[in-house]
Length: 101
Image (cartoon, rainbow, N blue to C red; front, side):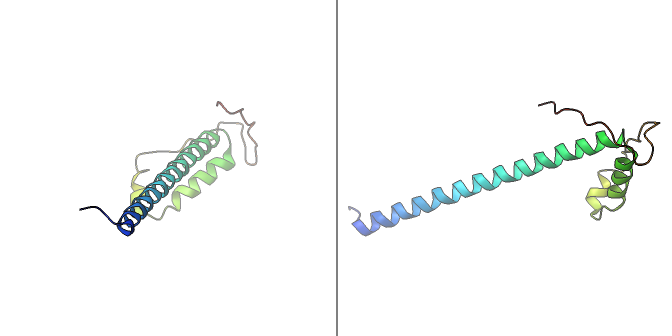
C-alpha cells in the first residue's frame, strides 16, 4: 500500500515539527547550562571578594541570612563564609584581579 501525497506531506510535517521541538529543547538546555555556569562563577567571585572586602563579606552574610528555601539553607549549614582580611576596613575597595580565562 503506497502512501498518498497527503499522507506523505502529513508525515513530513510531523517530522519537521519533531525536529523543531528537539532544536528548541536543545537551545533551552543550553541556556539553562549557561545560566547555571554564570551563577557559579558569580558566586565564586563573591566568595573570593568577601575574603578581601568587608562590604562584600557583609553582603554575603546578608544573602545567606535571607535565603528562604529550606533546601538552600541546608546547603550552607556546615559552611562558614570567609571574613575580610585585617586592614580591609568598612568601605574598602579590593583591587580587581584580571580574569584568568
